[in-house]
Length: 302
Image (cartoon, rainbow, N blue to C red):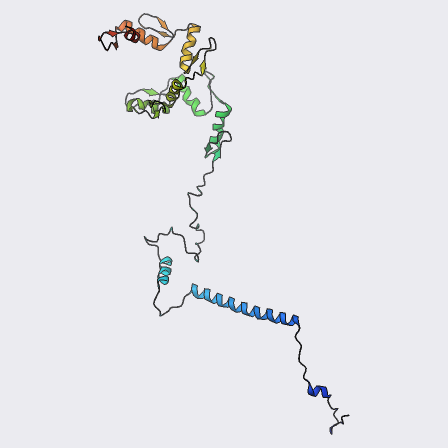
């Protein structure tokens, strides 16, 4: 048993003298320490990266010679030249100026023109009003009515051109022959008579035509189609005009009158042939005996 010292102090326990308290680390303490070290390491890397980017944006002057990469850097950031037009795409680390479209944007990709397609035939229009007028082709609607003859039209401009039929106005004059026309489009087609242009070619016999509708009529010669049927005798015709002339056979109408003898004819061609009786014109010549005839049928049958 220990004795008190001279100063009267209580002697320390022998275990306190022989052993020193050492803190024991648990698993939670180890994980906390590891997270602390990772956080310090990550912070140090971020600071290094930030300082590296700052040096890249504001490089310090260097006494070392410039490399090829540095030359390219100066050329891309310098004033545009003929070899480097401003339309070239910027470098990946450069941002386009505020309000400037990226190089990938182009007017060809986004023209700003919205089309309105027809739901029936797929034809597209740039304006909604044009699509509305086009739909009348499918519906058959003709809201513009002539106040004189009651004929209807799908467009107001067509009615305006039609009114010249009644007024006799022909404001479009041919500069070559002086012939007048009520519509500008008709004048354009008429000019092909002078130029000899025949842009509409038959794909089967290569025959050319000045008008598209003439080619359409001609195609019926090859197909044998006769869509115009007489309601009285059921005879078919390839052209509407031929049906109209045929109807005069049933009605007895003879609107083409000879100015010399007063004889009437149902068709204009018949009147033209009749006029040769008065003029003594003989335009048809036999290739063998050279005798001239008034009628072409006489040449082939003689």
